[in-house]
Length: 147
Image (cartoon, rainbow, N blue to C red; front, side, top):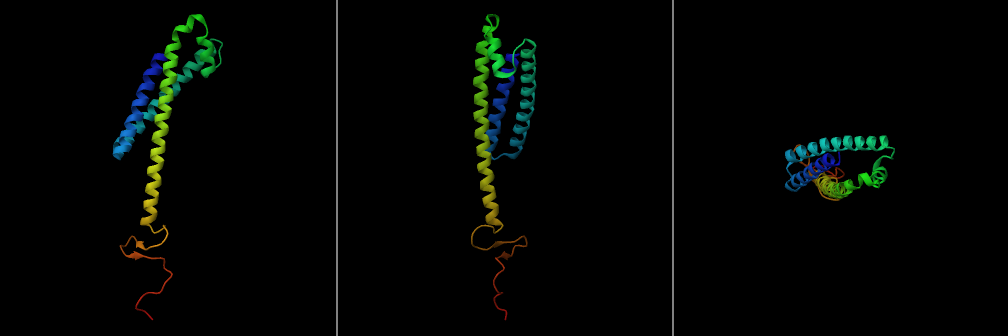
């Protein structure tokens, strides 16, 4: 079970990498594909984690990391410790890479919002163009050339 979880986690990390490449290249189509792949893998990872937790409970242990550590403490299971440690290390890498992508996405979103604010005239000062292509000012002044 740990080997399958590791394989899925490696695919998940690759999907996060593809997501990062798409973000760096501002390639929306690749970003959508990578995000969908990442989401599907996250669902599969959650299912295998649930199965692992059920197996631990069936063996009389708690679910999660605590139960896994108790299970690994048994002499008959000690050989699985390296695989568990590798899984934990990969999970930490996945979390860090996913957090970095999230921060990059938030930064890009902020920049896009600021650009839209400028284009829509919601920034401090200055006139902008409206949807009709005409200058859209604050509307507080008089029209020039009228009495």
